[in-house]
Image (tube, rainbow over all chains, first blue to last red; front, side):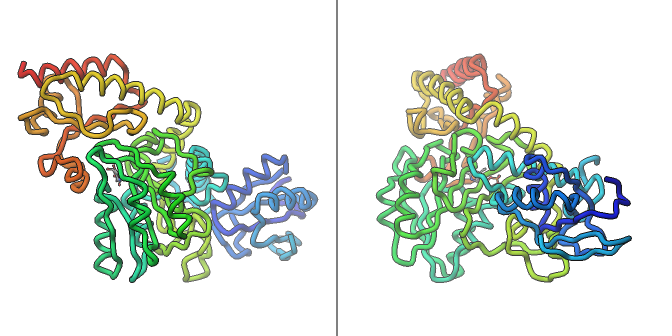
Length: 88
Length: 355
Ligand SMILES: Cc1ncc(COP(=O)(O)O)c(C=O)c1O
């Protein structure tokens, strides 16, 4: 999935530690993800966010809920620089 | 400077690398102490900063604290400061071996007691305190507990899943084998701690109030990510080695030292004679010789470096009867060999016999 991928989901966490923990859990659970700088259009809760393919949302949810690491917010990329906040 | 990015302040590669170093150090620290949620380990510049955060973050005017007569000044001085702010303090006297009686600590607790603060092992006598019993007694009374594990972290096994302590502080540069300028405070979930330092955390940047979640609540300003990179490596080594194994090795060395030194005329040992009741720290004096002089001779003639004097803990010395001249202190570590122990014993024999 390249940077220009039209469909991606961005997960925002409370702090750096929470992003790092979420990354560890997702990788451990075999959910494909990438750590990215928080897109400027989204309120930055810390410098980093997690990007997943929206199709992985269910699996990501399961893994993160089990670890009590649900994101503060989730955003779908709708078009160039246009995000829609969605329920995770 | 490949590792000097500022974590949590941006998303570039150096910042990310620093964030990963700090995360790795935190995760490994939590593993060493048997805690699943590493966010409860807050980093600090040293044990002193962590102890100040614990003490000044939990005490309020009108509170009462129980502590012991063998505390380091990094516990006693913040407590004395709080005394000036309306906190009252009971200091429980330890025995001549530096060990405090758990029942005496229990008996000192009152209705308004908020905190029991005690050292896990004295940095002067090495005496291990009966922390398990004291923590249980405090818990029954609903009193918060703080353990200063500066001398035991990484050297004596501490399993926080069974040892129910509320706050535990230690240095990164002693038994955890990390660089200087590292230390931490563990805060059990639900323990209400007011941050000592507030400021930028990289999180909730749109908000001018300190975040309430861990570790950010207690970690403001640029963190020592270079130190954390070092600490994470030493912690990985420690995990591979196992603290249990280090403890067994150090106890064996302490046993040989205690036996050997007890046989040297004019040498007085302080603290427990049983390695099982002591951390890897041992104080002694050569009769009629200033501790600084003993230290100087050990270094000049034999290349053995020790600490001599009061060890930042005047009360411990009063307890042992070695105030104000202090003691000479040796502290074998995981890399100490039996050959070095033999060399030390022979050096001490020569010094004490005036040879
Ligand atoms: C028992 C004890 N508490 C606290 C400290 C303070 O540790 P730090 O130098 O990391 O602040 C020390 C170290 O000197 C110590 O031995």
